[in-house]
Image (cartoon, rainbow, N blue to C red):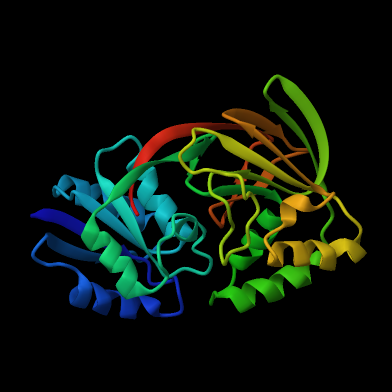
Length: 289
C-alpha cells in the first residue's frame, strides 16, 4: 500500500479546501493508499510538511492549492523518485491546466487513484525555484499587490490589473541567451515552462513542460490604446500573433534589470538581485497526471 500525504493550503480557493478534504475522504481509493492530511498555516510550512512526509516514508505528496502550493512541494522533490500531484483549488491553477488535470475535485482525485506520472521540467532562478512561469514587469507588479489582498479570486485579480495599468511604466531589461544579447523595453517578460498564467490565459502556446527548454515570452511596451487589442488576443488564445509579442527558446539565460528585480514565481511575489541567472532542470519532477 502506497503512503500518500495531502498538503492543504487553506488560503487558496475561497474555502474550497473544506470541499477538497471531504473529497479526499470520499473519493480516494483507500484500498490503494494509506493517506495523511496536513494543513499549512504560514509561509514556508508546505516545504517543512513535505520534508516531514518524506521522513515518514511517503511515496506520493499531493498539493491541495494553487501554483504557489505546487511550487513549494515541488521545490523539495527535485530529482526525487517521490511522485507529486495536485488538487487544483487556487486562483489560477496554471500548471494543472497545462497538464490537463481537472479543476473538478472528484475528477482530480480519480486521476490520483490511477497513479500515472510523467517526468516534467522545472526552472531555477538564482537560488529560487519555479515549476510554471517566472514573470518580470507588469505581471510581477500585479503579483506583489495581489499578495497583499486578504481574499483572492479571479475577479479581484482582474480589478487589480485594470487599476495598476493606469500608472504602470514599462521596464528595460538586458537579456543574454544563445550567444545573443538583446536590450528590451518590455511591458512584461516571462520565462515559461508551462503555457499559461492560469484561467486559460495562455502566454506561451509553444511551451512544452517536458522538452528541456525554456520559452522567453516578451510583450514589448505599447500605447495605452492598444490594451483592448492585447486583451482580446489573450481571450482568443492568440497573443503570439501580436506585433508586440516575441518568443525565444533556450535552456538557460541571464536577465539584467535596471536595479533589483521585482518578479513573480508561479504567481508569488519576490525581489531578487539585478542579475538573474535562469536554468532548466530537465525531467526533474515526477508528476501525477
